[in-house]
Length: 208
Image (cartoon, rainbow, N blue to C red; front, side, top):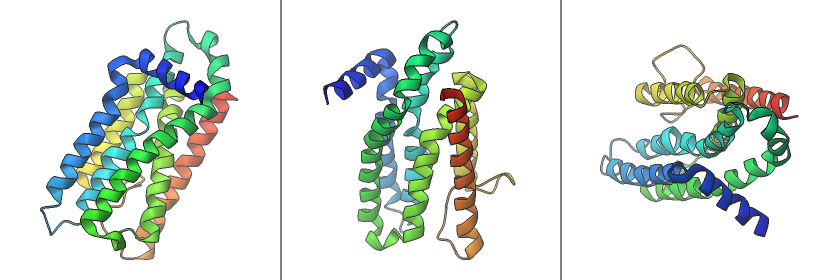
């Protein structure tokens, strides 16, 4: 426990004000969800806030932390340390952000009713959370640039959420409405599974 406390304190000191960014975003999500609750014709909107804002933001802490690997001259010096700690980092930040996502899910259930969360929707949210916990580090390790990595992830996420998956014929991983057929359920799960697998392979390749 003391080691975990030490790791979190070190991360806070290292990132400074950036460390609070995801938590500010969670507060914004709550405000947006309560605002959308007044729109009785859009019961899916609170969930779109969770999956389109909160879940992607949940993966940014690790990207910010591991960016120090790719500062000039730091890779060789820090790689040995990060190889030893990466699994612990994934677990502790998955648990930390998982608690906040769970609270937002609870708010969604309160707004829409518990019956809103069907089994496919729950499974989708879990896979989406795992995907965004991994994709940031995977892209960062491939392009070795924080700006480029965040630009790629943020652009894709924004375009998907803003257009509700209608902008480009690329892989769609979000659910913006209740699935009405087998294909609309299968495809997001398929692309998420592919994304998680490729992210895991990239991370293993760089940190093995």
